[in-house]
Length: 408
Image (tube, rainbow, N blue to C red; front, top):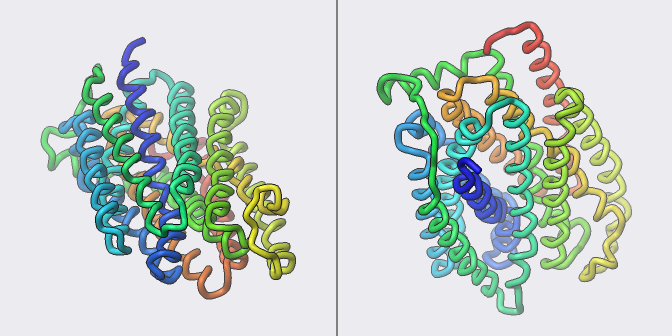
């Protein structure tokens, strides 16, 4: 099969970074326990992860086609390998910040390369949407693995969890070697005659009305997703009173739900208009929050610590199932805009998507963290209903603009 090697490399790299990138919720929970920081202090880890993603994406998006996607991914793996090593030997809250800084920088290079390569490796909008959904679904499988991988290293020694980074270094090394020997068969046209022209053309994208609406929608979605995903382990521990290990393991249901939802979305988009699918998913997600959160405020105040999955209340299983419904939104939004652009614009457009996604993740996580500390976790999650409502408005606006053939 043509380009089989690079396709496998894309999935493998995305899997590794899924574990690294979305371990932030786990590390936040461990930082509060081991390094004795507050919820609001711990929430800055999201910024150390997301702001470098936004910054690096802005700087290199237009330059990346000239540099080469394979070189960019190899560079990313080398950077994050060093980041994991320093975490092992640093063992302080300061070094968790450095770790997520390296993860953010590296993931920007990986995601820009992957999103750009999807357009090169596919030949139609349906094929693009299918591959985008499957890759994002595989990403969620990696996240689910992280929720079991980290607790496997927990013990009475509060520093034992750091041993997980030896294993992660091994996975990064395997991914690096596999990519190094993968054959990449593609040609990319730069959008300008020089790097300066490339940057100008990519910046012009943001003033296209339909593109602007798309990136705002991506911003809103990631605000929702990261607000839930980052704080669910802490939410499980403080609201449901799960043990440290169980709180992380139960959060894996969210990742598995997201993975399943994205795989299903790859199938459903062949038969259902993406606007209807996204709107229904947002409404159901909001409904789950409205159903679950009021019950948490009155029913779990005197619960003893829960250590076994057999003792988990029904609400503990229902809340993370929200992932099944928010899952299709992000890949469908991204695929719709990317497959509508010429392939030479996929890298800069991916840069815009990543920048606003990173900002959405940082702001969403920060707000939920501040609310978590000031008004409690159950009330903090109510905030997510606001971006959910706005997302429906912007999705309908996208549909209307597309029908009027505005912009792209």
